[in-house]
Amino acid sequence: MANGPPDDLAALVAAAFSLARGAPEVFGGVVLRGPFSAERDGLVRAFGPHRKIPVAAEIERLTGGLDLAATLSAGKPVLSSGLLAGTSDAFVIAGAERLPAETAGLLALMLDGAARGADGAPLPIRPLALLDEGEGDDPPLDPRLAERLAFTLPADAPAPADAPADAPADTVPKLPDGWRRVEIDDTAIAALAAVAPTVRRAHQAVQAAKALAALRGEACAQEADVALAAVLCIGALPPPAQDPPPPDTPDTPDPPPDDAGDDGAAAADQLAEAVAAALQAGLLAGLSDGDRRRAAAGRSGASTQGGRGRPAGVRRGMPGRAGRLALTETLTAAAPFARLRGAPAGAVRVHRDDLRIRRTKAKAATLTVFCVDASGSQAFARMAEAKGAVEALLAEAYVRRDTVALVAFRNSEAEVLLPPTGSLTRAKRALAILPAGGGTPVAAGLSAATRLCLRARKEGRHAGLVVLTDGRANVAIAGTGRAAAMAEAERAAKLIAAEGIGALLVDTGVRPGRAAKTLAEAMGARYVPLGRTPGAVAAAAKGLSDRIRAPA
Image (cartoon, rainbow, N blue to C red):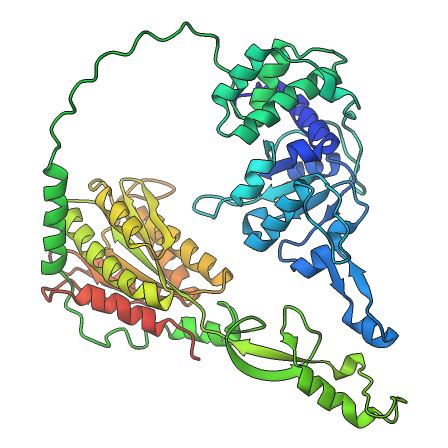
């Protein structure tokens, strides 16, 4: 879409909506990418009549299932219809980047015509409008849905027509019934296939060219239709016809391998073992009291839930997300009232108030975020220390289901080099390619690390932060000057303390300075100067992982 002319953006939106609604079995629907805005709200209304689907809706709620309360009242099985079995023309899902894998798979099956409801009837194919609000290092949209939805539009694109504020509008043209019979030249098909990333996307582009021609009343797709289809489905114009390539030239021997990179990696490994912080065992005790208090209050991912884990008691309630049906306890609660309810001899009548659910308690996974200062002449040493700590923690992650992430900051920005992962290979690769040198944007690094920690909490994990820096910020996010940079860094540190994120700050300066101590105090972190005891940073990281876990 970025390659389309800005003046024609509204026309492109109208064309995408027409195709998505007219043939969802081919085009699937649209992805509106961007945060909530008035423009996005207008696009959703212009998409046509629709039904909103909660991103966290359970599969049984989508496909239908046994209505337990109605079944108990009627004395026979009563099925409820799911949200996907409704009569709405389309479905809209906000926050689609957070769709559970099981839900995304069900929606993909629906678009393929292979999904069935609880009664065994096929679910109708309906167009989807997925509102992707992810940004930065947020997880991407499930690839199964991303491949099936042909059109991705910016959320602030102009709507094809003014939609009323109180009801969905039907403002885009209908796709003619005979659009599939429109002819298209083989050369155009080959051009679209050459720029399409997948076979499915090429098929969608070819069908889009035919549909666009049908909307104009043409019986054959023209060059303009092919170009517009490429922009809509692929995001690029098809390449012009080119002369055949010249004959292949004889292969030339590859140049000898360069061993410099291996030498650099070996030196980093040696430095990781030789240089570390002077930390003692158990030094991180008490660092994460704030995070543990939040865990107890249920704000950082409650450990008591209705899924897997150790039993955590039985209480009154409806089976579902809160817990599974506790059959024995339910019958025990209903049995004393059998006579009063007129139950036959040896039978029990169960009412809604008798239902009991079994809850379970499971330990939430732990994320440790390493925020590393990659600026200045000491950057190489800092990278080596972080590498040793991350690799040591990852060795534990395989058996404890912990994850780590790496944020590096230098010059004027911070970069998430390693999103949350338990892969040792990915961690090594991220650390090996890390550039070093330049300014010290401490505030940018702390802000990026904080976002990772808060996102982990929303996903039900506990998070801790290990910061390796000398604290001497000299690059500000919204300005220049050392004073502004230090003030921004202190504000970012105070946010970490306010969120109760357990943190450790390792002063990597050649000589311990006041800047790092002030930063540690602002973020409520334990301050430790860099020392000479091998392996201590790795031990501290493991200790932090232990301490940030919620109490069982």
